[in-house]
Image 1: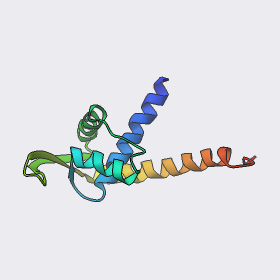
Image 2: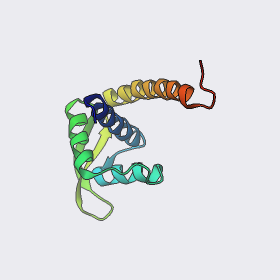
Image 3: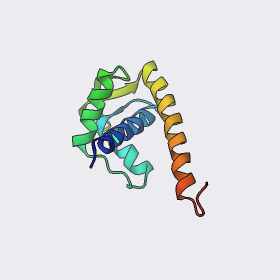
Image 4: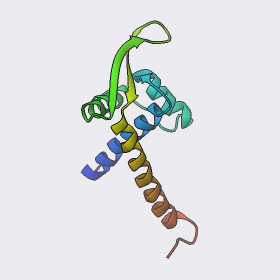
Length: 113
């Protein structure tokens, strides 16, 4: 896979995480499960991708975290969007919609000219 392809995949996961957290704080496992459930398991989020993405987003100031207790009373780190994270989600969503529209124009039967 090309470098730009890997970057796109990372950016996609970042956007999905931001969107997930726009619904409220969640711990890492719950973030992955929400994405999987919401997509009918079409997108499976592996821990080896999820946690580095969470750390990267937190380092950029898009997420904040605090320790708490999960539904099973286990100690877990809960993530939430920051104001910067909300702004990034809005910008990335607009970019994805433009991209999707462009791809749809090519893939649609008859293709737009």
